[in-house]
Image (cartoon, rainbow, N blue to C red):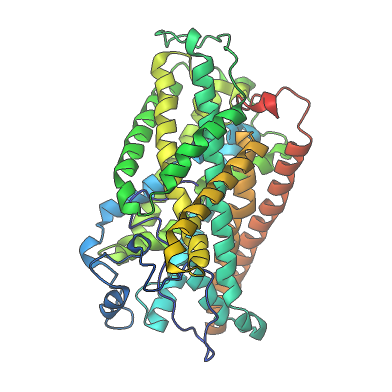
Length: 507
């Protein structure tokens, strides 16, 4: 999934005040994700939609009437074009570069068709989430509800008394999958950085200025890819010590520029001299299709930033159009890069298409530029789980220990992602596993069930219920089968030659 929007106050802030519910009983306390636990001693305004000059209560007072979608920090609200740019930026990351291998796992015909279907379903689920969030904003006279709040209120609207009594677990479930997804992204980033830097360094002696021939060079052996990950560890720890996202804005801009330049150069290469595709299978063996599903849903998992982006718009009524236009552009980008990359490199396609580029300085610079962008994006992906986990610990220590505990938890979380990346150093399997386990839940399974619980008591057509049930069932099947295949491939890798990435030899 993709990466969240790099701008500090739009695509990454999954917080909102959550007071009250639909039942008469008080809502159980949240688990630090969508409703950040804070007190007078821990005011980090980087985690709110309010500017430092405006308190959260002042932002709430700006909301005047039911159904009026006034937002926090109106002076900082985004235009429709800015929102579209944030949506595009937030969906371009390492998942995009893994799509050519995903198309290989599905087939040159089945791959793009499946990407189109998954894209349509994922966008439809995003629309469901926005519709349900608006429903509860009007019903509860709230200016904004996030993903976790929406699921909790949806369960409180359910006709089942058991679901109503356990509605707060809906928020916990969303928080859990957000943590798994975002930390999974961070694990992917470790493997991506290690793979690309290792390849650039090992091919340095054979790197030329001739980019017309993709000649295989004899790599100069260097240290194990796991040691590259450990080399990046202290630098990423220092990076996440920057707790205010506004301070990361310059790094976000740098990441956006480097990744954009890299993509332009990448497309420029893969559209040239495409080999005869007649030998490529139209439909790949079904055993590899679950790996395709995991990678595809990993790339399309941008649902966590949909509500924060809508929340920051000056004219949120335009957001559905922006969502569909933006996701149409993203789907076209995904399908084109996946197909062209597979057509260009065929069976030799690797876990990241950057690893297939020629060993000339121009395209080696593409790997380095994209890696720089991914390096700085790590802090932005890390922000979401940090906002969920860290306040839980900080609120339980004395004031003079808050900063130490904050930095300590950040260090532990970064080390955790590094250890997990070391344990699973195959980039394709990390992407597929993260996509199958958590991205499928957030993007496909939960939103249709949310629509049923929200509107069932108000009357729903059988066709809508059947459609939602089908989407959730397909998402759950992909979740189970994709996770199984990824784990099976990790435990018992296939005996056939694997052209995955430069770390596969160490698995």
